[in-house]
Length: 137
Image 1 (spheres, rainbow, N blue to C red):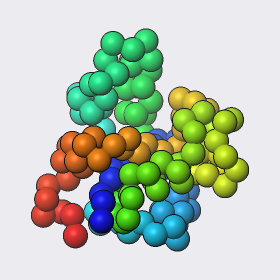
Image 2: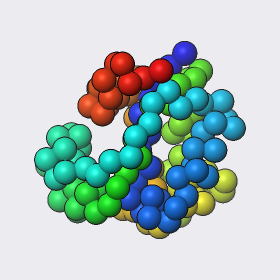
Image 3: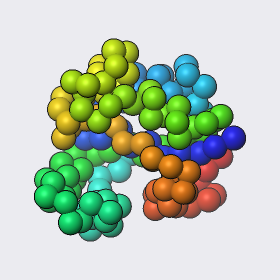
């Protein structure tokens, strides 16, 4: 049983598709073990996306991720990291397979509806960033 972090990003929250996205996870074998809706501060977003600090898109990413509320979740299931990434689809929604979350709900490569951990190691770090162990059931 693996755990991974998923974030429903501001564009998808604004479109009111939170339930539709969660349904994709649940109907494909992932269980929501923790969930909360919050507004990221610039400081929190910068810390979370620290790995991208030197990239040219960093400031735009921080602006975007703080532009509205997000929903953060711990998803649990067999091969949760890979399953979540498969369900999300390619980062660029134009390249995402039909039926994936990004193909169906993302606006652009920047406003791409969801984030998912890319490895078990990063999932552990990302989960700990948002959730205390007692919040994960």
